[in-house]
Length: 358
Image (cartoon, rainbow, N blue to C red; front, side, top):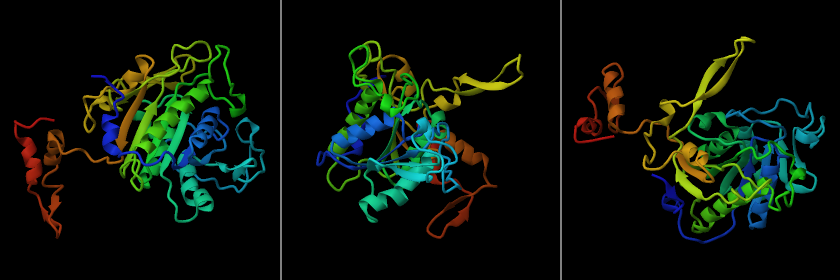
């Protein structure tokens, strides 16, 4: 069942309007000189937000949540698009804007540098970010498999783990990795640059959440994040997809994982997409929602999936079966004194009833 963006799910996470501005940390994995992040920074600022950008000095795609900090005080190679020269400090700011920073580390490391070093200098030591925004990435991040592979998602759940609300945004390549100085005010079709359109869509969603939140309330509950994916934006050539509507989705559903493919000529392996049964079972999510992969690949629509950092298996029949198989070697613990026992808790026993369903 496909649901148009009614904000039914997100509305349960946020409250009524009180403000249209927020303190936002902006990051990505494509690098600080990428067109997408610079356009997003510009438009978030134009919307009235107080934005600090900290992003990798070079492309760090595919790093997942790895938190790798440089061991060199200076850069040994130039930054992407020669935006920073080798020999410059490994952490630095744009000479023309003290709120724009680069760091020679992974996206997750950049999140921590932003939270623990840059933001305290700019906002003060006792000020907390209202939201972290990552992206939009150059390339989509669809399905639960990308939750651990994507540097964009890594930057996002690094913040969520720290208790900071965060949203990952990813877009189709739309011309590939491009320097922010190459952004066109208008394309040959007389339309806005895809980087600008992706950035505006991002700001639209961010502002919707900010405006739906009471003063003093969190934009998202503790441990919650959002994954957003855009379809290909066609503004380079035509207007067939320049304003893709938002659709509420879940990560599972039509999602791919990898398989190994051998080149018989070279004897080397590479990966190919594999429609995995494991990544497409809906366990915790709202199974009424369509999969984000299906939605984005079916036409001009943007997918919005709410996720949490709770990895524990849900209290359902299959979970109790696994727990039962481990008794008595692996016992249950319960009670205020953590009394050891092997008897299955009543809450789990109830799931064995044939009247209960997953």
